[in-house]
Amino acid sequence: MSVVATVLTLLVALLHLYFLVLEMFLWTRPLGLKTFRNTREKAEATRVLAANQGLYNGFLAVGLLYGIATGAREFVLFFLACVLVAGVYGAMTVNRRIFFVQGLPALLAIAAWQIV
Image (tube, rainbow, N blue to C red):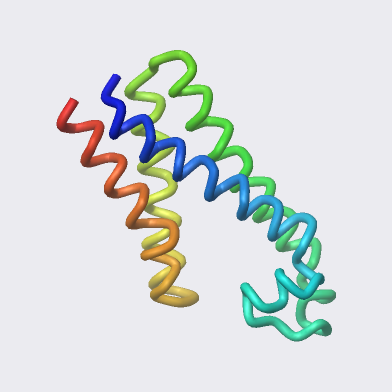
């Protein structure tokens, strides 16, 4: 396993654990409101949807961590591809900056795994 590929994948996993916390636990708190540029009213109305989204981010993180722990390269690449697709979709439908926060790190990790 390449150290660079592993570190980049760990970064993606940690980002998704952070997204889990933001979306499941901080959605209606000041940090969540600021991060997602929500009003308190909109955040309260979408709280359950955000928690569900956070749970999926947690699944992505755990999949990446499991792949690293077991040395399953294909497993890691599958979850990185899922993250990349989510980042591209988010950029197309919500805000372009989602690609840079979510999609680009996954793309860089995928590229690093291809060099291995």
